[in-house]
Image (cartoon, rainbow, N blue to C red; front, side, top):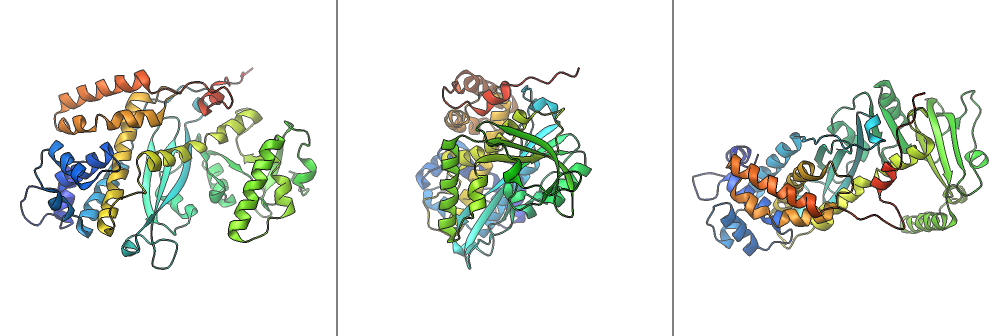
Length: 423
């Protein structure tokens, strides 16, 4: 990917017009390794990265190479890396092993300069924006993405960019993907789904009786509800309604959040919406024989792991930050950082995926310290294998989370359940 694909793209995209020190592969490696090692790298830092990959070039020489053609080369390499979906051995957590895969999907937007709006169109007029969409299997760690799209493109239109859902897989998405037709298609493919319930969706009992949530939801804090319903006025999708009455402190926090959103949008929040904030309300097609009410709630909580992944890429990898004001420099930098995030994810799969209490931020920090050493051995299979083995041992020794006294980590909540008896 960093050699053959990058060199081929360099010629085909017009980045390399004649033989010179900086080839397509050396340019890609310089940026990827430079920003991987230091996401806030200066041109001087990139000059050192060029030396690490065996290229002698001045700082001005690197700066002059940023162009639409250079961005196209990096985009090609990024797309090639996305196609290589690497999986680890499935993690041994009781709930996850009941399904073929546990796939969480979401997207995140990076605001770009208006000068590149003709490449990636943002949400405003003459504004640039790049939406990255990821489908992540929490069982094997396989990363399908990031797929690239215009910043203004709706999340539901990005689902088709990802791998087709297979029987026995479970899909976890947020309310932005709530769609009864999508749920029906998943059920027809023998796949499972869990979602928050979108307010305003028609809910009926199997006999057709209309359900008023406020009348059937439990009133006591900690009380729960698990009942068979149909979703949709026309669709009548057979579903489980799962609900839990939340503590007062959580309810106050949720209502405050709703009012803040309403204030930003300059729209009133309805009294019904504020009342329903007192419950966690979920819908799913997973039968109770396979997943209990408590397990449904814990499983949907895993969806937040993809938010943590985007946070890792932005806070640790700085994919949405840059020093330059030049639009093509910025776009090249974003692509290079995304490639680095994918390579980093592959190493995490290799070293840590079997460890439930893995600490990703610490792992990323440790990997960055070894990037230039890795760059030196990329083309030597034996040396690269030895380097990765040592790096894996280092990560396994120190990149673990401690137990939380107040709020259990996701892996702790998952480990709390055992597979239900089949008797």
